[in-house]
Image (cartoon, rainbow, N blue to C red; front, side, top):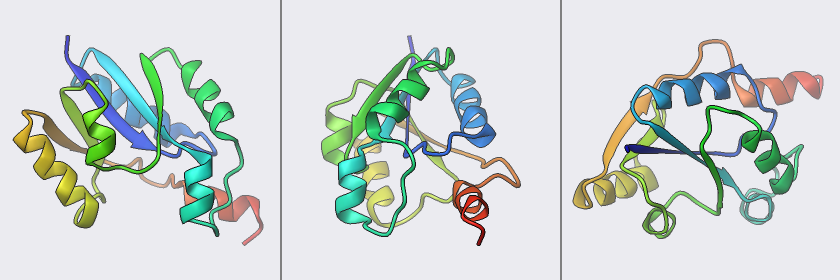
Length: 135
């Protein structure tokens, strides 16, 4: 069985997230979705406004039948990857440089494939948040 892993906040769950998960399943039998911990977000991104708690976001994701497992993580990095049993890491088309380069190199050194998936045109969590806030 091939396992694919993808990371995200998944607040304001929307069609773009669902389509991401569907893309992931084209590459693997088993989908692991890692949701970022709300306490970590509050500590390191204090201006971020997260609507749902970590437990609520996990509950939403666990209810989606295409997802096989939901886990919580702090930040995308080697420490997180070492704890997860996966074969393929799915990154967004905009995930380049910095920590993502480090993560890609770790995957390469540990026999993990990395794929880049396209965003759903016209759907963006930040834009949804701004629209709901009247910006």
